[in-house]
Length: 362
Image 1 (cartoon, helix red, strand yellow):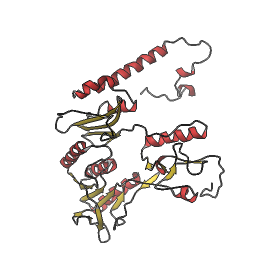
Image 2 (cartoon, one colour):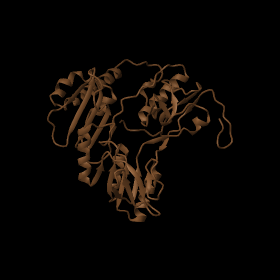
Image 3 (cartoon, helix red, strand yellow):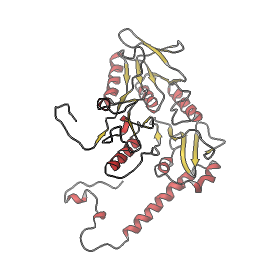
Image 4 (cartoon, helix red, strand yellow):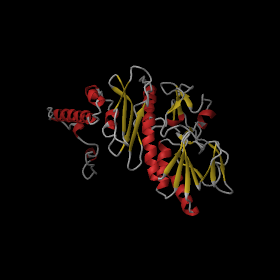
């Protein structure tokens, strides 16, 4: 491997983890000043500076996924009139069903953020800088700022130069091996079964698989249960996995009558949650994150959930916490050796010696 400094490094195994960049859609005019992507802090600062320098009033966000909705809310806080352009018929298409999307859309409308569904941008207009966005149907929307939140582009350049098989990302198998058995790829740069992860939890799981493979432990990569939570003040929006059942062995649990502005839906297979949509006021998705993170069996509360008693989810979490507390207490009462320190009883900071900083328990 040749570094930019001219140094040459040899390796037995190599892991590619170059991540991704923001995808810039190939739209005529997308390079005009006033058009931005949002990937890191520098992008956010550039958008804010443009808003202040140009005294902007209107903004358009391309994409109604999680990042697009959060970007629209941030732009609203900059006192801009914001419009989201979304190709699909609903917001957060991968995480929300129709009802959940409709509630979120109404909430955003109440904040002053409008949404154009099933819409595509044909071209971007401006003389020297952005002035308007033209949709495929001919409608033009005035815009001083455009933020493209259209997904990611894996950084595959090194993989291509190395002669690895690439598609959208560097192609890997279930062990995260590329077409060269001595080279692995993980995270946003890796393409597994035709998909790019784009999520931190998936990337860390892939890292565990790759390291295991290198050291002789066969672990196949699997997509972990990752709950996506929208960060917009005043509304709780959470989504996981499926938004509709894929076969008859999956049960949909939702209330026949729900309060206005609230929606809770689970897709359950074998008493395990494989899909979830929770939308409503703050706290509407309480407990669901813990249940999914622990991959808990919900069999004992399913009857309550079918009757619309969603507070039953809290009993699962409380029961798990009590069980864990009892286990820790039991362990603490076990007899200990009088010879030498019991390493498991000491915190990492305590082992550093006198005067070392200590952290409060979580």
